Structure formats: C-alpha cells, structure tokens
Amino acid sequence: MERSTRYTVIGAGHGGKAMAAHLGLMGFPVTLYNRTAANVAAIRARGGIDLKSEIEGAQGFGPLRAVTSDMAEALAEAEVIMVVVPASAHGDIARVAAPHLQDGQIVVLNPGRTGGAIEFSKVLRDQGCRADVMVAEAETLIYASRSEGPAQARIFRIKDAVPLAALPATRTQRVLEKLRQAYPNFIDGGNVLCTSLNNMGAIFHPALTLLNAARIESTRGEFQFYIDGVTTSVARVLEALDRERVTVASALGIRAQTAIEWLQKAYDARGSDLNEAIHNNAGYYGIKAPVSLQHRYIFEDVPMSLVPIASLGARFGVRVRAMESIIRLACIVHQTDYWRRGRTLDKLGLEDLSVSELRAYVETGVLPDS
Image (cartoon, rainbow, N blue to C red):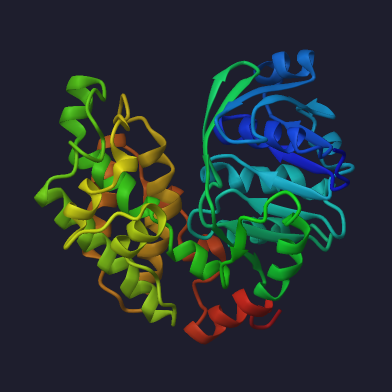
C-alpha cells in the first residue's frame, strides 16, 4: 500500500536500517542517508533492505526510493527527517543539514538522549538556518533492532508507547499527527525537558558498565549485563543516580518517573528495590555485556546524558555527587574530558536562564531577549 508522507532516515546503523526498511514495507517513500557511501553500497545496489522479524508487517524486503551520502539530495523532497544516529553526532548532522532544510519539514531525533532537540535547534540557529523547521525528540528508540549484514536488519520489538516532544511543545501535536500513520506508538511527552530527564539510559548504562569494567575486560563481555552485572551494591549506585535525576527534574517543576516505575511500566517488572526489580525483569535475561569499554554506553551516554543532567543540577542547586563521580570515572577510563565534550548548559545556550525562562523556552520556543 502506497503512503504519501516522504521520509528520510539519517543513519544506517542498527536503528536506522530497521526504521528505513520498516517504513519501506509500510509503503512510504523512503530515502536513506549515510555519510559514508561505502557503508550503504549494498543497500543502494539492492534498492532496499531485507528485514527479519516476528512482528506482523515488519518482515520482508523494504524498498527504498533512494540511498545517498549527499545531504542535499537526502533532504530535497523529505517531509519527515528521522535522525537515527548516536547523540554525539546530533550537532554534526545539524551543521551539515542546516543549508538544505526547508520550511515545514519535521526533524525527529530517535532518541534525543538529554538535550538533543535543544542542541539541534541551537546549532541550526548558529548556522544561520532560516527555514521554519519543527524539531522534536523521542524519549527512546522505538525499535529494539540489530543490523545483520550489509543490507539486512532485524527487529526484535517495537515499543508500544514512546513519549515524544517538539521544541517548542506547542508544535508537538502537529508532529504527532504527521507521524501517526506510520507510528501511532508515539505519544505526547509533555516537553523536551520531560523527554530528556526521563532518559533511563543515563542511569543504567554508564554506571553499570564502569562498575563492571574488570569483568568486561577480562571476559570480553561474556556475562549477562543486567542479571550478573547488577548486585546489591551496584544497584545502590544506580538508585543514587536515579534519585539525583528525579531531584533535578523536580527542581525544574517536572515529575520524572523513577527507574522502578519505568521498569514496571515498560516491562511489568516489580520489586521492593531496584536490585529486585531488575532481576525480576524477564526482558533482561540473555542480554550480554559490552565486549569492551569502548562502547556507546560510555562515549555517548556520559557526555550526552549524564553531563547535561549534572549540568542542570549544578545550575539549579541540586547536589549530583554520584553523577559527578561516574562522569569522572568515565573521563579517567577513556582518558577523555567528557565535561568539555558533553552537553553543558553553555553549549546548549541555557547557562543564564532561570527555571521560569527555561520552561518558557521549551513550551513556547522564546528565549529571553530573542
């Protein structure tokens, strides 16, 4: 069945390939962009992607209208631009896309991590982009998926409900309406502070990786990441990080869900504490640890998730000592200054805003003196 909305998917990794193939199978005209042409040569030659899945309607050959490494070509006819790359690349994508964006186009970051839509919008402003573009972010990637070959992908699960918010929030309903035919699973996420501060990857990924560093390096990840990697003491660190995240959100007038609440909502996993809830989550059994510490759980989630939350905490008087400790450990292990590389408030253009001004910005899009 032919659908009319023209999609461009930016990124041909695990998520991007799955999304492009699924959209093609649903009948939408899809262009796939990847900056390295060689990485999508097989997809271009075949004219699409083979998609495997146990989900009805998400298996078979997903045809693509075009495959390109030219951003101008990728955006020329797009109505919806789905950015499916690590959050550390959001700024670069915005810089490359800025000259080619057009009025009325929608950009969705899948996901935004923490501050993704804010960073993307600021880079567009800094690049002098005059196009009236709607920028939005999803709270998490809608797919659990993997790339399984040069032109092959697999979808394990499509999430039932994924919060999404536009910047400003007054545009969220317009974005949801445009996406509804393909993705009725997207729901109103409130505003981009809500989607950013309900980023559970910030809590689970970096600390769990770093606190299992010796085991990851000695076994090459040959253990169950959540089941074997989470013990009573590790869970206490995760709980401390989670309390800080929820407190930062509260300082901004946002009621963020706790990690235990999220586990119950997402997986129907319950427990008297986080350790018990994690071990009661059937979905975590069988998930292996990263094979090395050079993994996105650190190089993406620390600068693009933990750093902006900690930066907000420091700005608005919330002590975030657990977050600062995990960020510092990541800097030592990777011999990298993640504070310098991360999404600090000055990089997001928010360093001088009060709580009321920040909330007004995410709701209306108006910055003081703008």
